[in-house]
Amino acid sequence: MYYNDKTVIFYNGQFVKANNASMGLYNQTLHYGNGVFEGIRAYATEQGTRIFKPQAHFERLQFGAEVMGIEFKYSVEELTAITYELLQKNNLSNAYIRPLVISGVNMGVFSAKDSDLVIQCWEWGKLMGSKLLRVKTSTFQRPNPKSCVVEAKVTGHYINSILASNEAKKEGFDEALLLDMNDNVAECSGANIFMEKDGKLITPPKGHIMAGITRTTIIELCQQEGIEVVERDFKIEELKTADSAFFTGTAAEVVGLASIDSYTFPQIWEQSLGYRLMKLYKQEVLGLRNKRAVY
Ligand code: PMP
Image 1 (cartoon, rainbow, N blue to C red):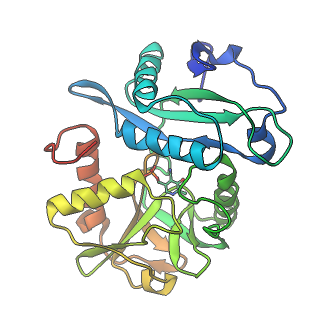
Image 2 (image 1 turned 90 degrees about the vertical axis):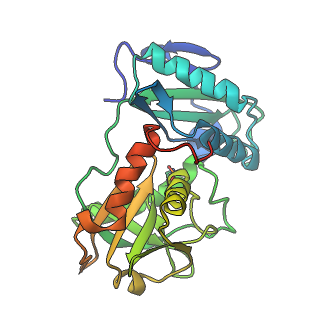
């Protein structure tokens, strides 16, 4: 599904066949989860293939490498150019792009001296599908921001997401919603959350969440459209009084929630702000809206 005989990846400074690439077994990413990655999308637009917000994504990758002490020398411009070339080599326009910075060899628990960059891409539908999601409040919390840098997209952090998703799926739900260490609503395993109440949106502030690039895009769209968005903490009990709610993320895009635990969101999805923003987001990524947004 992710690759076949023809798939080309960028690895170790060159374009190679995915089937021919190999990796050592002594690197620190494999053993301790010290790697950083990104999830980016490209879209087929009227002007050709367009990577959405490459600068924001590659800057987050650089930030992650820096805070984790991983050597990483590529500039945003180089990364963007390599990614466009990779898409072309794979004949892809609508694609999910996965850069990963793999740490070098080191069995100690301090950063390795060197790293390898791999960029992979494949065709991928909306991560969580298009159906409204039945969501469970996870018994797992998001990590304490004093235990790691939550805004860095570090491979090891995703153990927390996997535990939460596994638990939710095992109990028959589609997805997990995680609270933070103070019992405030934080985010989904791989997406941010917004709730709608009385015609305005509320979303958790930065601090205990991944500051999603899609979250920022949604806030920008709201500003352009005159939709009020408040960034503040709220508890799960308050979410269970909301009219509707939705998740946002690069892979998930915008997806509505049917329910949280046994609470069903009462608003008809097609009449919600989430639905309107889902449509606006699609136009935005396709470059069909006005150019007020900054990339
Ligand atoms: N939260 C988590 C935990 C994530 O993994 C992601 C995906 N990167 C997001 C939120 C959404 O971030 P973005 O909109 O930048 O993809």
